[in-house]
Length: 77
Image (cartoon, rainbow, N blue to C red; front, side, top):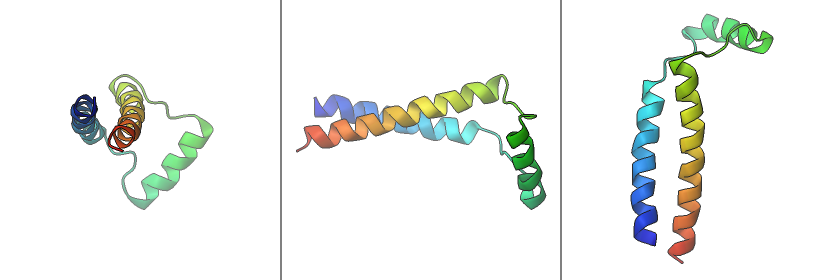
Protein backbone atom coordinates (compact mmCIF):
# COMPACT_ATOMS: atom_id res chain seq x y z
CA UNK A 1 0.00 0.00 0.00
CA UNK A 2 2.88 2.36 0.76
CA UNK A 3 4.21 1.85 -2.78
CA UNK A 4 0.91 2.93 -4.31
CA UNK A 5 0.76 6.03 -2.13
CA UNK A 6 4.39 6.86 -2.98
CA UNK A 7 3.74 6.61 -6.72
CA UNK A 8 0.59 8.73 -6.35
CA UNK A 9 2.55 11.30 -4.31
CA UNK A 10 5.20 11.57 -7.02
CA UNK A 11 2.58 12.03 -9.74
CA UNK A 12 0.70 14.66 -7.70
CA UNK A 13 3.95 16.49 -6.88
CA UNK A 14 5.09 16.73 -10.50
CA UNK A 15 1.61 17.80 -11.63
CA UNK A 16 1.38 20.42 -8.87
CA UNK A 17 4.76 21.90 -9.84
CA UNK A 18 3.68 22.03 -13.48
CA UNK A 19 0.35 23.70 -12.72
CA UNK A 20 1.96 26.32 -10.48
CA UNK A 21 4.54 27.15 -13.14
CA UNK A 22 1.82 27.54 -15.78
CA UNK A 23 0.01 30.24 -13.80
CA UNK A 24 0.64 33.84 -14.81
CA UNK A 25 2.04 36.37 -12.34
CA UNK A 26 -0.48 38.33 -10.28
CA UNK A 27 1.39 41.64 -10.15
CA UNK A 28 4.20 43.58 -11.76
CA UNK A 29 6.33 45.21 -9.10
CA UNK A 30 5.31 47.21 -6.04
CA UNK A 31 2.74 49.38 -7.80
CA UNK A 32 1.06 46.30 -9.25
CA UNK A 33 0.78 44.68 -5.85
CA UNK A 34 -0.82 47.75 -4.27
CA UNK A 35 -3.38 48.32 -7.02
CA UNK A 36 -3.89 44.59 -7.53
CA UNK A 37 -4.71 44.13 -3.86
CA UNK A 38 -7.24 46.97 -3.98
CA UNK A 39 -8.90 45.59 -7.11
CA UNK A 40 -9.08 42.12 -5.63
CA UNK A 41 -10.53 43.48 -2.40
CA UNK A 42 -13.23 45.39 -4.27
CA UNK A 43 -14.02 42.40 -6.49
CA UNK A 44 -13.25 44.11 -9.81
CA UNK A 45 -10.71 41.51 -10.88
CA UNK A 46 -12.03 37.97 -11.37
CA UNK A 47 -10.14 35.02 -12.74
CA UNK A 48 -11.70 33.55 -15.86
CA UNK A 49 -11.10 30.68 -18.19
CA UNK A 50 -7.72 29.04 -17.96
CA UNK A 51 -6.60 31.08 -14.93
CA UNK A 52 -9.64 29.95 -12.96
CA UNK A 53 -9.09 26.33 -13.96
CA UNK A 54 -5.42 26.47 -12.95
CA UNK A 55 -6.26 28.06 -9.60
CA UNK A 56 -8.87 25.40 -8.78
CA UNK A 57 -6.57 22.63 -9.96
CA UNK A 58 -3.79 23.96 -7.71
CA UNK A 59 -6.07 23.79 -4.68
CA UNK A 60 -7.18 20.24 -5.47
CA UNK A 61 -3.62 19.06 -6.08
CA UNK A 62 -2.38 20.71 -2.88
CA UNK A 63 -5.06 18.91 -0.85
CA UNK A 64 -4.17 15.61 -2.54
CA UNK A 65 -0.49 16.25 -1.80
CA UNK A 66 -1.14 16.71 1.91
CA UNK A 67 -3.47 13.70 2.09
CA UNK A 68 -0.91 11.48 0.32
CA UNK A 69 1.86 12.72 2.59
CA UNK A 70 -0.14 11.98 5.74
CA UNK A 71 -1.14 8.55 4.41
CA UNK A 72 2.46 7.73 3.53
CA UNK A 73 3.63 8.73 7.00
CA UNK A 74 0.90 6.53 8.51
CA UNK A 75 1.78 3.49 6.38
CA UNK A 76 5.53 3.76 6.97
CA UNK A 77 5.20 3.62 10.76
